[in-house]
Amino acid sequence: MNREEANAEVRKIQRICRGLPLLTEEKRVELHTAWHAAHANLDIAAATDVVRRAEEAINKPYRPDFVHEDWQTLSARASDAIFAHSMDCGVDFNDIIVAGPYDGQHHDYKCPKCGQTGTYRAPYFELQEA
Ligand SMILES: [Zn+2]
Image 1 (spheres, rainbow, N blue to C red):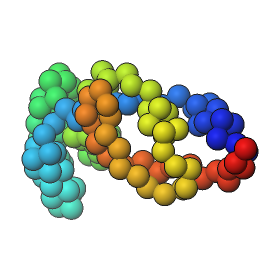
Image 2: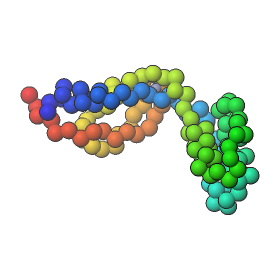
Image 3: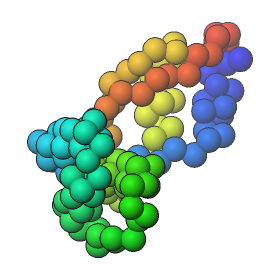
């Protein structure tokens, strides 16, 4: 496989930058910690309160429509809200991948448009140099 074929392989899957996190790092840690405490104590009232606070923090209208003691639903809503991203960036993340090495390792990245930073795992391809 040459570099061009490897790039085409990467681009078979659409990857769009998800934009910046909606919550500040401080707020994410605060809510995530509160969630873990509520879950560890199996405190459904506290867990419900974390979901309400998290959904309000991202300006998502709070829906009190979960089944009581349904930890799966609460957990999904907490995690969706706490780790929500703006989703408004639109940069093709494959551009970042194809500009990097195909070594199967983790690499830091910074989105050129929205500035989102993080790490991604590069695919591994054995390249035949032309
Ligand atoms: Zn971006």
